[in-house]
Image (cartoon, rainbow, N blue to C red; front, side, top):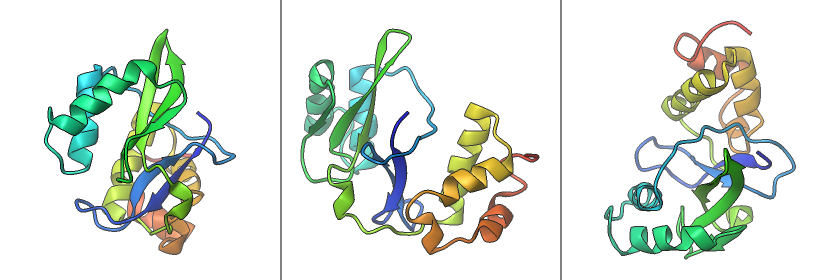
Length: 163
């Protein structure tokens, strides 16, 4: 899909930068789709921001989904902007991200976070580790803490092999 992954802010779970979707970037994002109900997406977004699943934020987000055509910002939080990514098999696709990506300073993500993302790229797209390294190293924030060689060393052995 069009856009980019940007690493910024501080992940409470992983340390380092968190991944955000920048819909305005002139590149392509590799993703993975999950079939969720609006309530489930609301719960996921709420949990990403340390809020109660099924609580007011989750319910508000779920209620917005049928009407979000491009994007809708609910507030200034990390994942308070809902973006419509188009359709897949006749069903709308959504993600949540930060509403003002341009205002965020890129921050290098941790090895454990990048490893988790790399594993998903290999599983979803069948990429070899070299392609994963190239893709991740191009994301804003990654170059602040990782050379391609260091990233390859950190990821190799668990995210898949080959090219």
